[in-house]
Amino acid sequence: MGDLSHIREIHTMTVSLDDLSTIMTATAELVRAGLLSLDNIPWTVSLHDLELITELVARPAEFLLYLRRRRNPDVTVMFNAPDELDLFLYFFEAGLWVGPDPARVCMAFPFMPEPTTAELRRYRSQEPVFLSSRTDALDQWYYTKGRTGEGKETAPKPTMPTPPVASLIDELQSRNVSGWLSIGATLLSGATTTQHQFARNGDDLLNNPSPSGNGRSLTVPVTGVVDPAEGWLLVWATLPAGKDVVGEEKSLRDYLRAKKHQLRIPRGVVFLYDEATRDLAGVYYDGHIGSLDATLTASLSSLRPASELGNRPHPNAKRLPRGTRRAPRASTKRR
Image (tube, rainbow, N blue to C red; front, side):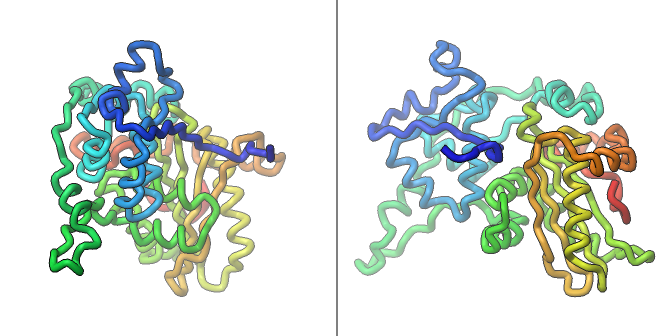
C-alpha cells in the first residue's frame, strides 16, 4: 500500500442490495444499542438509493457535503425519517444541519471567543425532528424521465438550489486543483449569506486595492465543527499588477502553512486573484499537519495573535455565518 499520510478525510459507507430503510435511517438507535460507535458512524444506504442520489447531485461537492452531514453524530439524533431519500431531499431543502455545541467548538478551536448565553440557549433549544415523506416530486421525475418520446413531459428533477459559490466550485473542479473536492464541499457548507460573502471576497479585495501597491488578503477560519480535524482556513488574496506570481505563490503558501499551524487547523486554501485581469490566478491547497521548518517557525511571531482574529458578530447575525469567523478587515500584509 502506498503512502496515505496526506489523507485528511475518510468516510465509511455500508451499501446494501436490500432495502432496509427502517434500519438505515435509525442510526441513533444503533448507537444507543452499542452496535455503532460515535467516532465512526458509517453511512448505511441501499444500492438503489445510492444510485439515485448520484443522479440527483449536480456536482461532486454536494455529495461530499451530504456525507459529512449524514455521518455527523448530532444529525443521527436530531433527524429521523422513514426513508434515506427523505433525508437527502431535506438536505437539498434545508441543509440537514445541526448547530454544534458552542462550548465544544471553543474547546476544539481555543482562539474562538467563549460562547454567549444566547448561543448556548440556541444550541439547547434544538429539538429532534421527524421528517415526513418528501419523495413525491422525486417519484414523478423518476417515472417520467426518458419518456418524452412517448408524448409525456418529463417532470423536473429535484435539485439543490444553485449555491452562490457554484461558479467557484465548478472552476476548481474544471482546473483539477489539488483538494478541489473537499474545498468545494467546505465552501458549500456555509449558510446562503456566508456563501454570498465567500463569492464576493475576491471582488471586494480587487475593488479596494492597496495604495501602497501591495496585494491584499482576507483570512477566514471555518470552525463550525467540534472536531479540530474538520476545521479549515480560507484565504483570499490579490496579485498586484507587475508582481511575480511565482514569488507571490511562495509567500502565500508560507503564510497559509504558518497560519494553519498557529491556529491548529489542518487544512487550508488560498484563492489568488490577479488585480490586472480580475481572474483567479491560482489556488493553493495545504494539508500539512507536521512541524514547521525553521524559517516558518520564525515567521510565527509576525502573525496576528490568534486571540485577535476577529470580533464576535452581532447575535442577530450569528446563525447566518453558521460556524465561520472572518477577520475584521482585509489586510495588506499576511497576518
